[in-house]
Length: 431
Image (cartoon, rainbow, N blue to C red; front, top):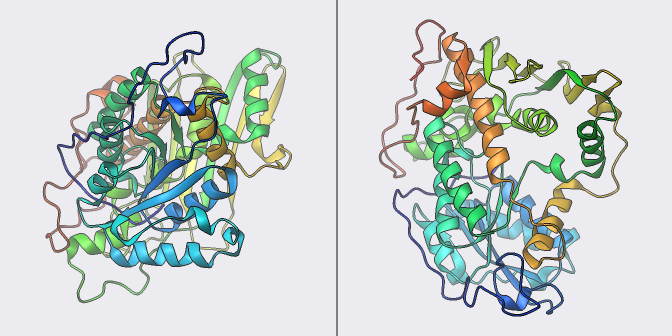
């Protein structure tokens, strides 16, 4: 993921040309509204303007993937809370040898480089058709809501929030995006990996029989962003933004930020979300200081779907040299699926998702809107986290009704922020 962006509770943005003359009359009428009538299938290849919110590693790579996977698009704006992140991202893009013949599509003029806590609003008011949201997930609900209100098509990195209040906000905007027929492509790239798609289709067809049990793993190494600690001039909020993976409010914990990939695959296969979970977790090696924040280093969970099928889930981050396993497994009455046995795909799925994005927008391929299913997968992860933190069994109805809202009430580089204690089951209160 990338360097974080900004915050505002009330964003209502209009764009001069976004859905002008939205309905196409006559026999060539569109099945759904796209960014401009000129982009109707068969009506040409007008240049599409793209902006990025969140200029860290994930956002920078998203631009690389987009430029390699698409044609007739330009990156015309960038936004981040930190100027050094934005300018550093742009330098990397200019120096990337893979983009040597794509530089003419990087049209980011100085007045389209927006910095600060309102930077995302300024970008959305600029002349863009598509926005890529690549900040840490704590900001995703607000940014997505603002993008949909501004009538932008969206590439949206996962996950889609860090608390139930935020994810429900995202879901409300997701419904609106569906009504407006805006394209929303998620960063859950397995949904665009050909071998995964074929395997899921086969399981859904019934050829492999009934699903009996499912398993998901993200067993990897820790993400530590600021090993040297805080710089003297960084206030509390700036520190937590620059070290965002260590704090629950902005990261969501590993099960939300990373393990979502695997849990989303199982939800995709099942065609729905679990109805109940019991989870456990804690910190085995992670030191108790501000660099390591207040997230766990391992969580295991037993999910139950409405039809009685169980999902056994395990994620952890132990020091390098420990066992690794990032995969999914499904046992069916007539066979089994293991993602570790999938053949290598010729097309990079990180690029395939951007190809699909533009084909959906231009109506050269199927309409895509993954906002709601990946939002449900995000809430699936949060449900398990809250079960592990509290020691309680948590149902889908309970997480949908939860009043938890982890977002700060004030934003500024020097805002004071306490580090919440590490959650202890029996003491931690599920709201």
